[in-house]
Structure formats: structure tokens, C-alpha cells
Image (cartoon, rainbow, N blue to C red; front, side, top):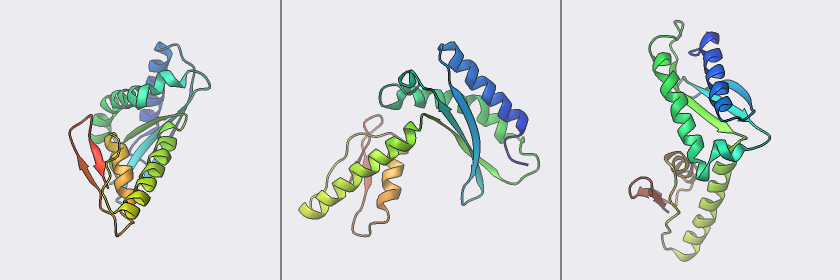
Length: 165
């Protein structure tokens, strides 16, 4: 048994479809669980909409981030309060993605970071990347951690927090 019982999964699925319905949008929703190396379970909510994905994603993913916050607020607390069915796995979180926006955005951010690394190696001068969300900064830090000659650091305050390479 997993942290998200079938009943909880159905409640999450229905709530998401209802919220999207209030926006007069049609979408397909899929739920899957991922187990991390430290035995924490994450629920991945994948939403696919052929039209009007921009309304769910918003400028720079702001609507998606807000939507994800709503879903987490509604369902993370109950999941942490003992709906684990006796399993010892800990709930890591709920992640919402629309039309694989997060995956493609992460790939784009990694490409930008790798280009910056090439410039830093050539010029031997540090470079500041554009402001990014916490998730995007984490992706960059993790990707560039494999480069022993490169150091990364986050500077500034939200929402203008940046990475120095």
C-alpha cells in the first residue's frame, strides 16, 4: 500500500478536474507515484490539454506554480497525518505538470547553464544567470554538481534570486 490510497488519489483527481472545469478548460489528468532514493513518495500529477495550456501554465509558469500550491495545500497535510496505511514511506510532495512544461523548461534551463559553463571555462570569469524559481535553481545546482571545476551559488532575494557560476 502506498501513501496515497486509492481514495485519496480519486479525491485529488476529482478536485483537479473540478478546478480546471471552473476555468472552462478540458484536460486529461494522470497520477503516478515516484519513490526517491531516500524512500520518500512523490505524487506526480500530469495534465494534458490540447488547447489553452497557456492558461494553466501562465507567464513563466506562474499559474502552474500557484495551481500546484493549491493542490499541495489541499492534500499534503492529510497525506502526512497518517493516511499511509501502515507503510513507513514518507510523503515528499505533490508535483503538477501541464503538457510536460516543467520537463521541457528544466531541459532548457540545463542547456543555458551548460552554455554559461562553457563561457566561464573560456573566460575564467564568473557569470550570473537570469532569475529562476527555486525548482529551476535546484535543477541547475544538481546538474552542475558533476563538474568538479565549477562552483554554483544562489544570490539575491525571491523572486529575483539568481545563480552565479
